Image 1: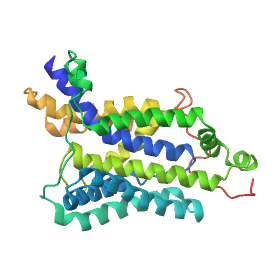
Image 2 (image 1 turned 120 degrees about the vertical axis):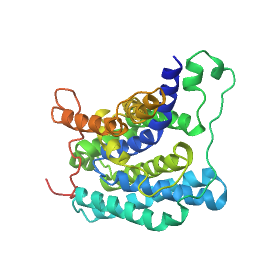
Image 3 (image 1 turned 60 degrees about the vertical axis):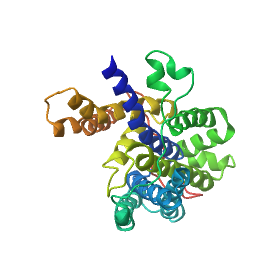
Image 4 (image 1 turned 60 degrees about the horizontal axis):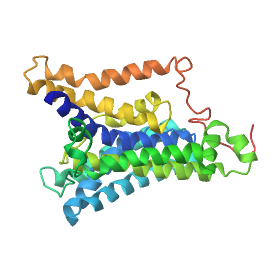
Length: 306
């Protein structure tokens, strides 16, 4: 039982940076913009968050800085993909290379340093509930923020006029434009807010989960988040399940090693990426499993053209 409790606790912690980034990419793709640069945004968020926390001694300023770093890179993507109408795949991949290279260059002085981190809190009364108390109520504040954010995005997307505008923009921008919706404006809002959340996910990685900075520390998590968007069917509420599941697969190797499991470490570390490949394969039969992407995803909108 202790093993399962420890595994579920670790799964939530490991899944939280994935959840922030997946929510950010979900809202971005819902508007019709494909941002393949999640890996670059996350690693820049991780480096910026760590650096500002180190310099100021305040990890919350670090979290904010990580989000702003993600927002700035998302703005670059928006300029190319929304304003200039260039290929969104090319622009997104450029962000990956930019983020990895820039974070490695700027962050080299912070390798091996110690910043101020975000520590877990114990919620009185609830944390003493048998089993569930330890699993659910002994985490850092950002874990609970991510869950509240999931509910907020679900309500915003499906229960508000702005959410309906976002969905319409992603499904049929021509019809949305005819209805008086400013397609480019909605896409910019979604892309920038999504970039901010992706950056926060990266900052969480360096300030609350791993609690260190190393070059390329995202280790492919951005690509996993792209698969999680598909896994969740572009629905925020399903992203929680996917993020915690993949987070659990990520920490499983450490937990099995701790109890003396003899499977090679390298093989166990492959599990999350194998699962990612399986999710992408599943997307090939997306109609059968209702994993339908927004119809205009990745397509630039030229006003007045049909």
